[in-house]
Image 1 (tube, rainbow, N blue to C red):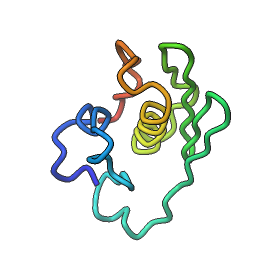
Image 2 (image 1 turned 180 degrees about the vertical axis):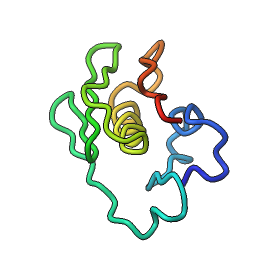
Image 3 (image 1 turned 90 degrees about the vertical axis):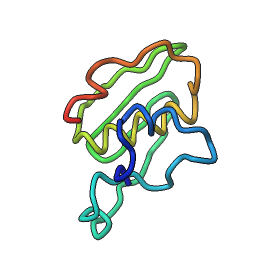
Image 4 (image 1 turned 120 degrees about the vertical axis):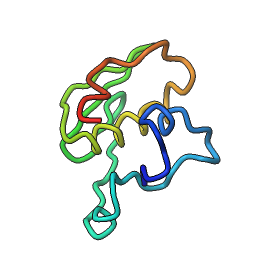
Amino acid sequence: MLTGVDRVAAVLAAVPDQRPTFIVSDLRELHQPYPATVVSGTTVTVGDAVVEVSDHSLTVAALGSPINRLRAVCAALWATHRGRLKSLPPEVFLGW
């Protein structure tokens, strides 16, 4: 949950043993179904958000909701590019 995390960048930069299992924006989401994270090659989809990774870049292919976008970006970074990306596209932070 993002309660207690002061910035989106903090969750994106979390070291493996500090990464959340579930990312929700507030307590109300604890009672809602949690969307599956689907990884297909270099594409990560969470709910209505889609990100694609290649070499040293990440592209937001479908914005989706801010929370699903964050979930997808985290999954992509943590699984494939942790520490190798120099920057993230600004649309990652839209809605935050």
